[in-house]
Image (cartoon, rainbow, N blue to C red; front, side, top):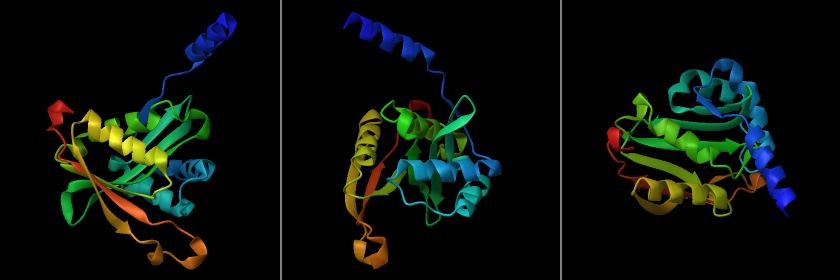
Length: 181
């Protein structure tokens, strides 16, 4: 048993640091491939991820390890509610999951100047996506925010062929002021 623990400690030390940054246009295709790897998210076109990386880069986050993309968050400010950040997709490479990368990406995003006046966070999550549900509930607890669940998008809105679950709307807030995050 001691040998296993020593070996695990060595593996942990071998892990390199995760770096967070804004995406660039050239990241669109690697992001698209990452989303496919998760097997849990709707895969949009590569063009969509190129656009996100170009036009919404300030509210998107890449997690990178040894120059390889291992995580991605797409988010945007809600046009009709400028105090709200809508988190669209959160992806972490299967080999890197359960290490707190998604939570760290969210905190990185919320610490950015572009989110300094964000008061609420919204996201829609299907009932079977327990990881995202847990992540949002942990974030609410970390920042001492309330979390309200309501109807988001009913499964009837999606094409029958897509066999898509309903999406519940999570609304977290209010966020602490910027210096307290």
